[in-house]
Length: 103
Image (cartoon, one colour):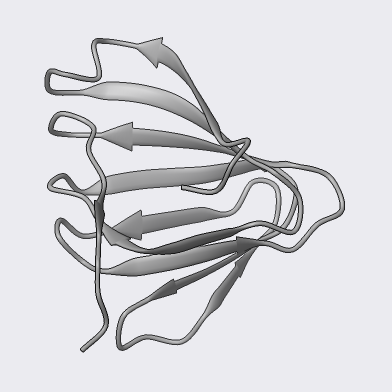
């Protein structure tokens, strides 16, 4: 994760099932390709986020936009706004993130 990212836990324990978090991504920052064990359901709260799942077209999320990430699906993101991007993310399984090396 880029320097300056932060997570605030809204509900649950990130080490257990069904945690909800806010993820703050600094402006003009890239989140490199990675995966999660869990599916993730996201709503962009603020900013503009470019999100791309491997093998799919890039999505541009604006405040209120929803995106679903299947479990173990490689994805990357870029906070394109001049202010930080804030995402609400609901995880079904414990929160994790693993770097994904593109082959």
